[in-house]
Image 1 (tube, rainbow, N blue to C red):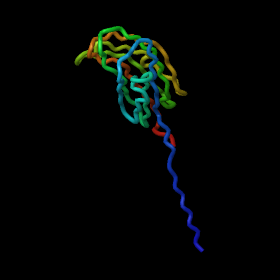
Image 2 (image 1 turned 90 degrees about the horizontal axis):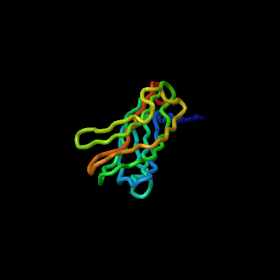
Image 3 (image 1 turned 180 degrees about the vertical axis):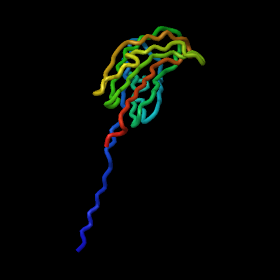
Image 4 (image 1 turned 90 degrees about the vertical axis):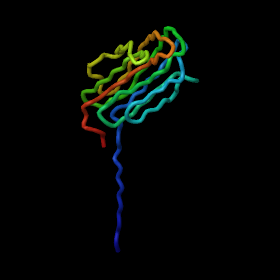
Length: 155
């Protein structure tokens, strides 16, 4: 009699960087919002029917993600935002910037979180209000970045 036992093991991969940027707009924002960056990204809402929402997940040392829209007319836009996520456990960095790009030049760039300081290693949650002065055709939005010095995906 032969007993054959087969075991198939698949490692559990935990994303080392995951984040969500949700906008709660008091003024009318332009739509659609678009975005991208490394890993898996998801535009959960482009702002056409609901509040704009962007999500990312990446296994690695981190990256930079952009979530933006194109201004249809000249105006000042105030956007309440919430940025939450988890960027692993060791020497975590979390940064959120607002920007306006007019043509080929970035005319505004401001860090909305504490730049260069280690973020919390148990996750993060930041909120604030960003104001954009835009002209027609300006690209405006948010740049998220993060990294860690972990040893790679958890298994």
